[in-house]
Length: 238
Image (tube, rainbow, N blue to C red; front, side, top):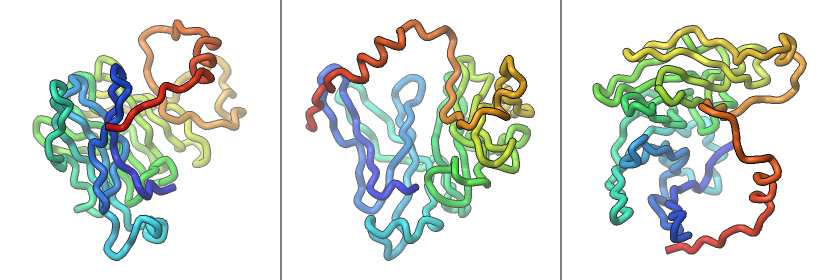
């Protein structure tokens, strides 16, 4: 899977308006994520390989390598600064995706593989962290495996990470958890426990994009279904 013509837009939930943040013709921008204080937008971006046009990007899928960039955001006038590269993975022959900032604002968590944009399909995908104070990038060695590790999220206290991994059989992604220390070290990951010990063995489904929760869902299934099936609010491009 390839994002051939991706860009970033900003949706104003109060005004119902949409404006373009960045959509460069020779760059693919994807996977945006806000900093906890809402003042910085992080995202992944890759340039088209030399001689490759958007309609033929699938021919160069193994040459696509994404970096992680950041732009400062001014909520007063909804403007963004020029982007800065914070993880130059392409210079190392790698591709970095899915930036996620820890709630304490100290760490940037991402996954990295040799190429491409959907790392859940890449056996070599591993988890890394960037120390936002020092700029140092480190792998989560104890948590990573020999198979796909991707789609990661932080706990609200920045001490735990949940992510999808295919380490069990190489086919199905299952939710794994690792402890993350204040100095940037992870522990050996463990699968989310289930009451039935054969649950994962018998389940022919994958877990993707797992998230921690601090309380049960209070909205009923019916209300969620009604919201999904209700008439969409028409956004207006500025």
